[in-house]
Amino acid sequence: MLLDQVNTELGEGTEPYKAVFMSGVSRVRPVSMAAITTILGMVPLLADAFFESMAAAIMFGLGFATILTLIIVPVLYTMFHGIRYRPLNEMD
Image 1 (cartoon, rainbow, N blue to C red):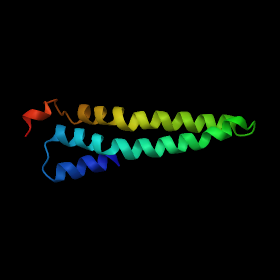
Image 2: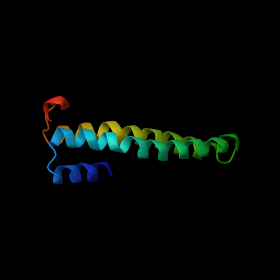
Image 3: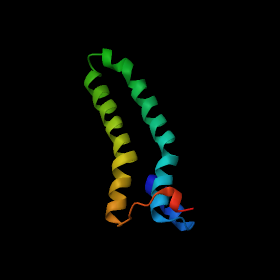
Image 4: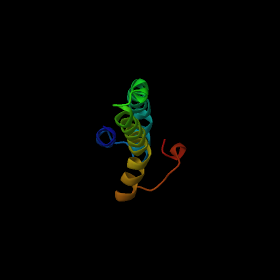
């Protein structure tokens, strides 16, 4: 979803660094809310002996995937595509 948003921004003519930045900002709430609600939904399963390890694995995995999606993916995208940092106030 994040990379699709970056490609949409680039297709609209937005400068590459600003496209990556704005895509990350626009995806923080949906990605975080989906992860947080699922993580909180797994909390009651931590008390069940049969599902404790599964719930812990799902909770950790979602937390890690959220960080990966919101921080690591944009950083790797800018590195692999050679996008240089420019302050956003210089782009307007």
